[in-house]
Image (cartoon, rainbow, N blue to C red):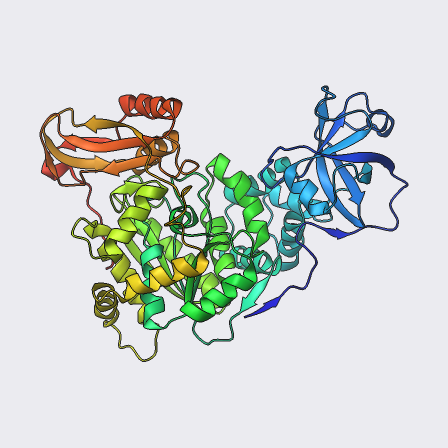
Length: 533
């Protein structure tokens, strides 16, 4: 693997020599996670705060150790947090300076980011060009934007929907904002889902199947932000996912695949910053979604990608015309970026698998790999079809043969052997006394009428699992016992909720009492969906 990084660390730039003489304070690490925003804390009675004319939410420049960052000011009245002669910094900001508590730092008023004029043009509804997006994205990756300014950019791009050229420019700029990998192989495959479907842990099956076939599949995944579990959260139940890059390279070279958290890779770092405001706002516009996904894959060195777009009444995409529009946008940008893309439209009417939450989803994955008769059939079948599509990227495989090859790899135990090897290489948790366990507290949700399961609300099921504690509490979540089309009698068990803490259990119980997420009706009430498998 060869890494190209044309810039210094993503959030740090060289100090400007023409800055005014700044004021000096002692740095203090304030243990607050401000989630991709640099925050500086000044006491209201601090002489620097009064002399410089700072106010809450104003932007400042902090210099220490030959580095500088931009940060947003928060004003403190409690000297136990920050004293009058101290400058407090949030966790992210402190780490970027690379100093110890008490180190001398200087602070001064910050100049607006160079790209601010371009941001204002986008807010005004103008179309931006390649250099405009490069400037904006570089300032975002360098943490030069406050959360307010980031929100303005995200909302402006959502309100005045980006055209396909702008999406391409944004994707290109996001790739350029961080590290790009070159695995020195002609075929590097990956699989991604646009999200919104609880369970759906197909990546943890696809990777060992295609790696056992011999394809290179370095899977770096994100942790969950609004879902009950991400791939990295679920894999963390089985193995260490926070690995230095040199270790990941060795694992991928040896085993042809990995399942790791991508937070240490510095791939498209601007995307992580944008996500920090997109998710709380529940904004996931098509253009930003395409740029986010494709920039990560291209930066990771992928040459071939299978993309899963689920459709259903409570999925992100709710109709076939909408899915086809999104597919065309993905294909246009991928083509411009020289990424071979295979878009697959799948059934998103309900969760995939039985478990919702890290431990329960890890159980489902291992049951499929072990060919356990209790394994969820829908998870197995979907993973095989996606793996088959990736295997057909192999020039030695005929079109249409991928599914059978994938099934043979799974049924023969080769996929399980490869997964066990990857787990062992990353650091198995099977003998770790602190390894996550299923939540000890639980309650059951039962059908309130007889009939057929006619609907399962993905959004509500995910919300209940998160209220129960997932993914921060790995053993929390839902264990589904009924799926669409299943006949039930009044009082039959629909699902079981697990939690580790009484408060979480009660929050989840109250949500279930308001809406269980299940609709019981007639067989003809089930939503129809058209898929391409």
